[in-house]
Each structure stands twice: as structure tokens, then as C-alpha cells.
Length: 255
Image (cartoon, rainbow, N blue to C red; front, side):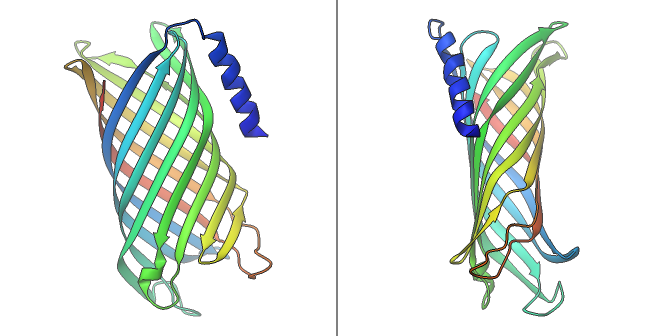
């Protein structure tokens, strides 16, 4: 229902701009980040993974006029993680391993509205996204399993662009909130449904013109907090509360 409502609103907005000239802008980039994932069961630490990740990113921005635009952004990341947990019935920390492969991708579509106050643009956005992460816990040995996490979410954000120095540099802070609509945790052949959770993103891009485009360096922080899943009555298992922290930097070129 939420997806249909957003799609209808986006179509109305786009049709209202149908006669306007659409200006596309492309951005390609690469990023590196450190990811820490933790789970708790009954308020106690259950497991932790730390991963060093690399990613490629892409962004298509369609401006209908100075105030209205649509953005489609995506990211594909890969790396390896170090695992800390416990064997069956044993304490946290009794089992450690390293070198588990990990990959993730995220894609979202947002509609953006830009207003101008005191000569500074203020852009608000709203849209939908999908995040997928595959975690190869089966590589930890006996008892491990391949795990796939899917998040369907709504997102809202706010940002601005400010000229700094002699005006050749642009500082662009941005913040966004992600609300989990539905999550699915595939643990081997079992599936758990997640219904409560949220995410946050903070970034500060510093850009300057290069050639016919511009280059940006963007430190960022991403966060997810997901509550206990519903119980899988057939398997008698549930997915525990978890948190994900990602700290990194992105280098990109807009043309």
C-alpha cells in the first residue's frame, strides 16, 4: 500500500513536469568502509562480525526544474568479515573465525523538493529502498550457515549545499532516516520476518569542479537497528535484535 501510494504521487509529480526539460546528471564513485554487526539475545551479546568493505556506487539525478527532481541511487559492496560468537551452548567469545566473504547491495528511488532560504538551497526527499546482504557464516565451519538479509524500507532526508572558501568548493551535509517496512532473514532454509527497525545516514560531501563535471569526497556514517523478528513457528527459531554500524568515505565524479 505504501509503495503504491508513493508511486502514484511520483507519477503525478512527474506528469506535472512533463513539458519541462529534464536534465540528467550521472555520478559514479567508489567507497571503502568498516562495518560492525552485533546481535543480542536476552540483553546479552550473542555474536559480532567486523568487515572491511569496498563498493562501487552509481547515481542518476533527473532535474525537472530548480525545485523538483528524482534520484535513483545504488551501491554494490563486497569484503570479508571476522566472526566472534559462541559454539552451541557456550559463552560469547568461545568461537572466533576470520575470512568469511560478505556482499551487499542497496538501491533506492527518491523524489526531491528544493526550496531556497537566505540564498542557500534546502532539499528534502522521500522514497523507497531495498537492501540485500549475504553473509557466509557457513564458512566458519560446522554449525555455520549461509544467511541472506533483505530490508524493504521507506526513506526521508534533508540536505543543503553551501559554497565555501573562494566559492570553488561546495560543502553538502545530508541526513536521512530509513523506516523498515518489512525484512526477511534467510538462515539456511528457514525464513524469519522482521517488522520493526530503522536506519540513519549522515554524510558531508566536499566537492569542486573538475573538467566538465565535479569531484567529491564524502565521509559518511550508516546505521541500522532491527528488533527481534517474529518467531518462525515451523522451525522454532527467531532472528535476534541486531545493530549495524558503517563508517567510511566515498570518492565520486559527477558528469
